[in-house]
Length: 281
Image (cartoon, rainbow, N blue to C red; front, side, top):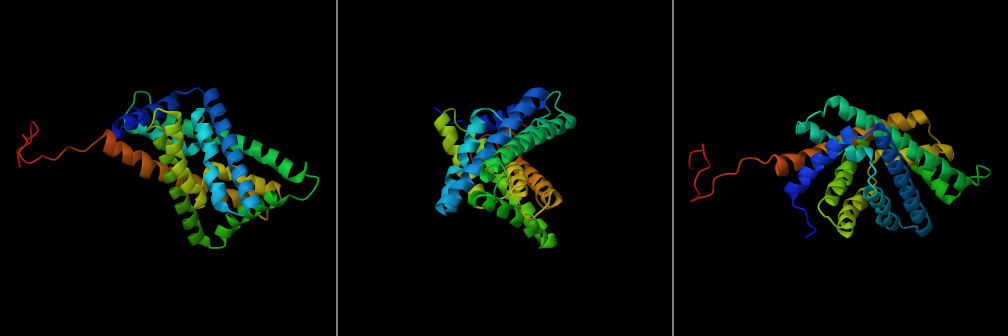
């Protein structure tokens, strides 16, 4: 049977988090680099579909192809390690420390950023014929997205920052649900179906994903978007990273860990003998 019960995949989540802490620096960076690059390509793909069809739903429906590819290839996104790695710390796995967790997060961030930037440069070349002419329609759309989701938030001040943060929380609630959902099945088709649904939700709803933004905003700057690197980091990337951390760890990792792995004591059933050491009701 391909279905994995919640209790079993909760243990798999902790095991996966532990393995990532002890992974070599080389492997961590390579896997993160490839994850960032593949997700960036998927974002470019989805935006191209949206521009060419005029229908954002079609782009959102097909965007999860990138997430499925990188997951099945065993590559790592920052959003995923935000959710999984702390569980090994919560579970007191031998040798897992706060320093090891932060090391993993830092390496994955750098790898994801490098991979996304590589694709950003490549796509900027394609959209402008090697920077020899103005961006095409897809390139112009990417620049518009970058402006709206940096200076657009800044124009609303604290309210814009709160909105950005909440969108980032909601994003990794969905994305990490996709990561966990893939562990519910032992078949490739089952994993893909389980991942596809929450990823579709996040992309169509316009939630803020730190790695997708590592592609969109540098691309927007390269393609002439009216915002700066400082705008990008202060009014998008840093708050998005923090929101992604809160969303994935709080609403996915900690919830599943606390109810499926560290379950609460069962209440006594009428007519059943009381658990040892507990008086009957």
